[in-house]
Length: 116
Image 1: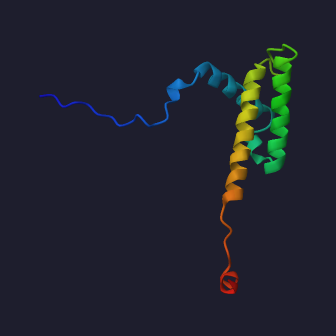
Image 2 (image 1 turned 45 degrees about the horizontal axis):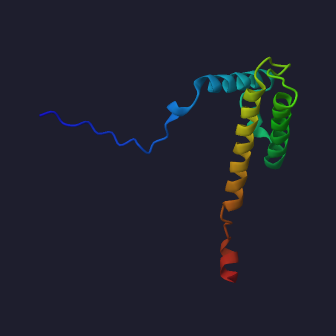
Image 3 (image 1 turned 90 degrees about the vertical axis):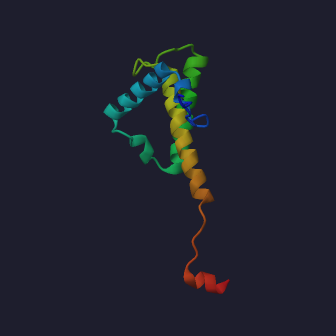
């Protein structure tokens, strides 16, 4: 008798739900940024400045698309929506980094513990 196949992966992240053309567009924007600056340069921004700058950039790309009806970014000839997605990813990265900094327990020195 053949054994029944079991694979307990129902609670794993299913990346097949993502649109790969969208991911390709976001990757192309990141590759443009790598050529213009350096790979991963966006991660070097100061925490608060990074959040602020990428919110501003996200708003610029959103408004160019939504209000001006501009589909493609004139500098890169890539979709504003792909640029917007990068900005959202960057802002989320910094928000998550900020959350970890805020929730990190403060280590007390031995002398502080003795004081109570």
